[in-house]
Image (cartoon, rainbow, N blue to C red):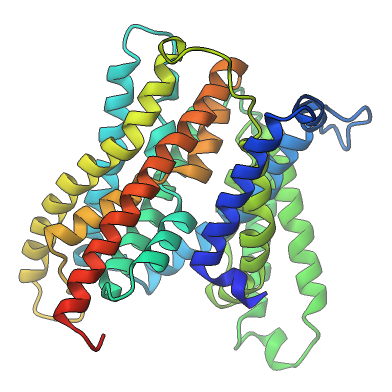
Length: 400
């Protein structure tokens, strides 16, 4: 399963799954399949009444957010976000990449009842963006990838906060308290797997701890779902509280399953939308807001805020005597290249669309199509821009 760890293969699998879902949904068997994935089981398990689509978006997708949280924690502790100078540029860029698309969406949908969809175009898909960079970016220096990764991780952090703050209703505090208890137990127990813990040094078997961690993780997810908070937040919390060394090992083990199973299944189910038989002029403002905000809003927001962040980062680093905190500076052309990649919303944007338009199925379908179209435009533009930038670097450094 090593090849599934590759960014380019992961992006390819994700795109193929989404295309297959959209294709099947618009064939003669599409109606029956849509009915199957949206059907609820007759016998709910432990009070859970979820459709197959929700088991994927609320259940399996928590694994993806768990891995995202592990990456975020690593970047904050020992990576490219562990100092103000390093974090300034991606932080400013991520903020611009959220604010400008949201403003464009709100401007397009002004006067309609669809403004609740503003979070949809604010997300960047880490797997897809890095995959496009890996496919077309031979010769581009590593600092560009580092900047894109940091930007996308911070972007996902903002998406997580949006989900927690804006898509949480009727919070049940008793279940939220139970989730806090089991998550705390998960974090404390994971520290027994650290290399110098007493459990490890006495060579005791690790599988009992692993089994207990799985049980605590499932309970945290269950309590979070029952609390009214979106269940993927459980994955975020677990990733943040897990001890860093065992978390790194867990990330390595689960990454192929996330890339090869979780994300493709979500992309397939989310993209299963029957294309509405309406004229272009009849498409909702939400559709046009998302299509415009993803490729254009992300580009404008990340470019401008990235330039501003670069200026601030240089000023902060210039006041520090140590050189180890100073990031490798990016040119405006590099920032613009990353800004094109930032318009690939895909996975998290699809989830946002489901949440924002949960009560309006027709608008939700158009929102899904808009995410696919907007992300598709960003992919095409990114392919050309990244290829051109890579050729410039290869001409300057022929042996690179």
